[in-house]
Amino acid sequence: MELMSHSSTFLLPAPSNQSPPSLTYALVVLNQSLPRFSPLLWSHAQLRLCADGGANRVYDDMPLLLPHLDASDVRKRYKPDVIKGDLDSIRKEVLEFYANMGTKVVDESHDQDTTDLHKCVAYICDWAQKLDKSNLCILVAGALGGRFDHEIGNINVLYRFSTIRIILLSDDCLIHLLPRTHRHEIHIQSSVEGPHCGLVPIGTPSGSTTTTGLQWDLNETEMKFGGLISTSNLVKEDKITVQSDSDLLWTITIKMP
Ligand SMILES: Nc1ncnc2c1ncn2[C@@H]1O[C@H](COP(=O)(O)OP(=O)(O)OP(=O)(O)O)[C@@H](O)[C@H]1O
Ligand SMILES: Cc1ncc(C[n+]2csc(CCO)c2C)c(N)n1
Image 1 (tube, helix red, strand yellow):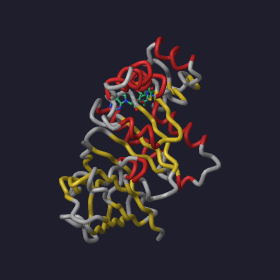
Image 2 (cartoon, helix red, strand yellow; image 1 turned 45 degrees about the vertical axis):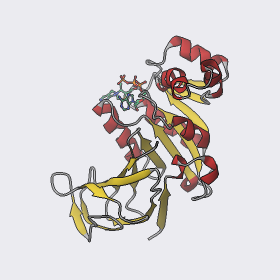
Image 3 (cartoon, protein in one colour; image 1 turned 90 degrees about the vertical axis):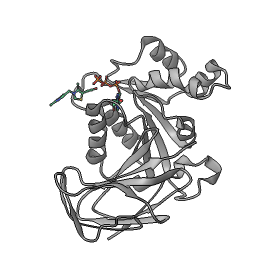
Image 4 (cartoon, protein in one colour; image 1 turned 180 degrees about the vertical axis):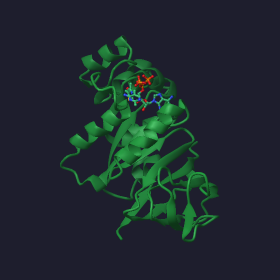
């Protein structure tokens, strides 16, 4: 079984961002308070999208996160490449501001069956058509800590695009999928993440999961919703390994200054 490595180097400033070396990052900003480290995520990304009302957040909140800079300079500097969604939440003045600066606006109001995050991930997959998808990583800012229907919809996107690396982020934690098709090594960036973590099977029970590096390791252990799931676990080593017969969600706390 092939190895998949994970490392939250996008939470480190660009110069220290050494491994894995060749990931291409895309950022999606959702319609939720911007995480305080959003400028850092922005600096790592080669493509930046706003999901509908996410553009209001970039317009309103980016200047608040960078109070030492002039607000209108910040708005010009943090210009999304694309705004996509059903466009029922973005304010008119925000849409006009970015459209006039050259942001591509994609109106998909005809599709009321997929979320704006789904629409943005589909756009990024098209954009990255020629890339080896294993080198693409989509960072999603503001995905957690709000309306539960949106949160669970965001998690569902991890499953709908289970072959793509997608990381849901809030101020407090990150979540990504560990596909059952691979064994996993998670390299902990202990200056910015941990120690609290969890491993959760959603949808399908796991008949057997084995881990190393956790306070409460699993040893060919069964996990299911309604039975045992691993929450309030702790990372004990710099490298965590996970192997399972089911897709699992990995979550770890973020401790950014
Ligand atoms: N409170 C929230 N918590 C988590 N994610 C959110 C929240 N609000 C919005 N999002 C995410 O941001 C995206 C864009 O949000 P927006 O408010 O523009 O969506 P929407 O489709 O108009 O929502 P709705 O019509 O259900 O209010 C959503 O698709 C969702 O992924
Ligand atoms: C069974 C079912 N439940 C809810 C919706 C509504 N919905 C889901 S995604 C979306 C777009 C949000 O921007 C909307 C309105 C649906 N279509 N089908």
